[in-house]
Length: 265
Image 1: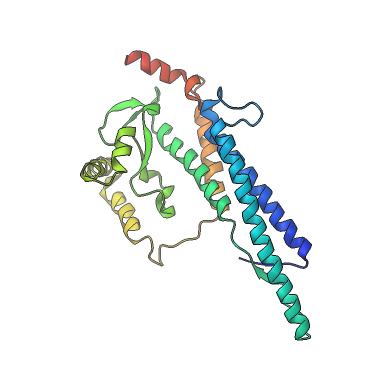
Image 2: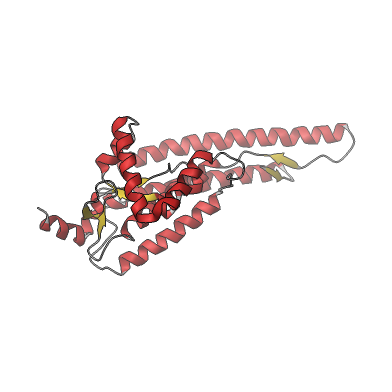
């Protein structure tokens, strides 16, 4: 990424702003992860103890990284000045600085969390019961986890609603092993997914999975894209919870889950 600078001070300001922005984004990310443990978080930081320690380590690593990138940019800026003076001409002010990849990664994680939540609760009935994709069993949505049919690492299909279905945690874990059992579960997942979205839609997902590195399928996914996805699905999820007063994001406050447990105890 190239950026024009007019002074060393401006370079320092850019990387200081980056350091602060990264820390705040990471803090917001950890806070989002601790919302379901609201009774266990530190009242000052609103983080679980393990995230407090992780956040402190991240701050140090982030500061060191920004300092290293800042020194490199300043050195390049000064080299251009010397080169321009030596050649008795105006020097270039355009300097290449690294992309801020950490912010992008954090925004994708937050976007996935809200997107996956929507893919479960939007498919639930009035009692918030969903159909588990592998077995077809009807269970409360909190008894399931999300699972991408095509890996979430592929941005082109990560936020495709056809690609995510509720699945039991034990099936998720088994599928991650890559053994014979994982292949069997994936095949059952595929069969049931075809019943829901038809074979052509599943074929489209599989095509992207196979050829996602092809030039015709490559697209740029910036932090702003993931931020828009996060804000979109957070708004939709908030609306769904508002429509049902006895539902809540926090498991301990979700009366519908307690009612379901009582009926299935």
